[in-house]
Length: 119
Image (cartoon, rainbow, N blue to C red; front, side):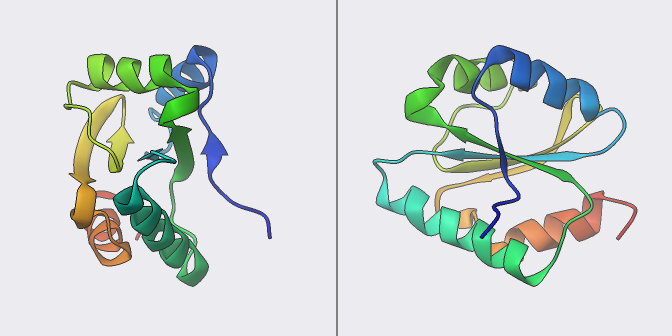
């Protein structure tokens, strides 16, 4: 199965994603491979994507493999690092974010409905 989450593995990937958020909102999912809560959040993101195709570009940061990218997200967007964490970004600004057990298909869908005008 093709996974629609593009990986943010390098600073260049992050730069391109944030620059692109000026034209189309992005959703960033920060995932920790060693955290059970993050595994459950990943399933929630997968459930959301199985039911719909959100009008945003979708990205994932695997924290253990891209700590510099994860830190840069915190620094550039001004949102404290959490894991798991999901951030909805438009124009380089965070419109909404959630972490831990608040990362659910339902909460993400509600945020998209509220913040992305194409819905």
